Image 1 (tube, rainbow, N blue to C red):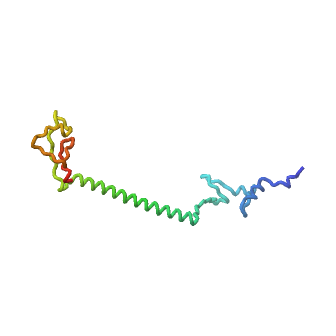
Image 2 (cartoon, rainbow, N blue to C red; image 1 turned 135 degrees about the vertical axis):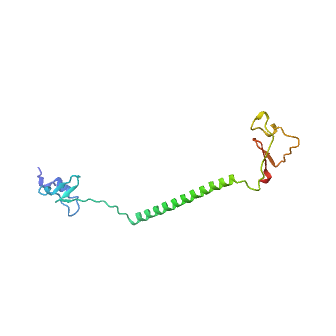
Image 3 (cartoon, rainbow, N blue to C red; image 1 turned 90 degrees about the horizontal axis):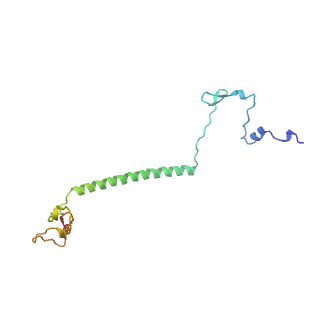
Length: 150
């Protein structure tokens, strides 16, 4: 039968993996350990501070800087795109409200039969003196549009 001297104790097994200079607390030292109202630990009345700080490698810093620059550029591009879209909408509104001088006013075709609003051009009651050129179009709602002046 083997004696207990040849086997390490659980505490010795645990301490074998600890960094140099770190030792376990004996029962005599346990009285120096305290707990505050906020459940923080104290040793000899001084708070035990644990910190974890993030330390980036050079390549990680470079990557973070590249991502930040790309984000700023993307935000700037989005602002320019939004501005261009607003200006385009504004230009469309100005263009639709203003009547260009080169477009003559449209003339109306004869009314549709039976008081209808829309009808085909051939259903309208045309006068014999009405002349429509091949460059003109009659819309369903009765407008005559001269395509050559557009």
